Length: 144
Ligand code: AMP
Image (cartoon, rainbow, N blue to C red; front, side):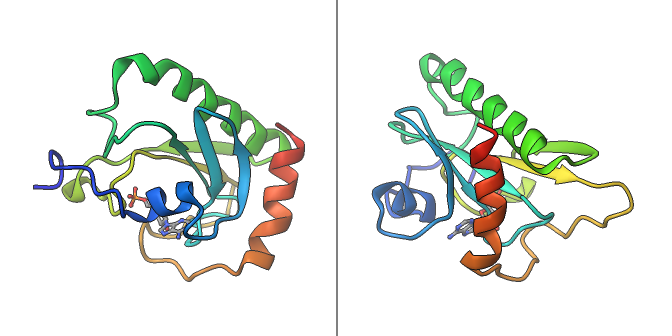
């Protein structure tokens, strides 16, 4: 049962938050951290995670923290749009393994979409190199 379980403080995103694992960051304040997905489904695939909470998913996010976190999700989504100029934008979020979740710290995916460009499958992409992600992160950062 992955939908309701204890928060694992050693999940990948907790390690990124602690600085124990590297990430290509695009935004950070006291509420949220946004960084490039290393298995991008589209060019510019960005993740936004909350700070200061031990939430595995959307369902167990404390209500008091939700509003401020969602404002950051929207802010990063707007920056992805302004920075990369896609034709559309997908905002996705999975809860539990059955729904496709693989990392158990709440996160929203922001996926820029270009007409005619295929989107990769979730959890099946090739690992991007930091030097490929850095210029995309720079464009998004510049638009925040
Ligand atoms: P989900 O399957 O919704 O839990 O999404 C987890 C996402 O985290 C996937 O899109 C992965 O590609 C991504 N991911 C896994 N490990 C890392 C990492 N070390 N840095 C950045 N993104 C990661």
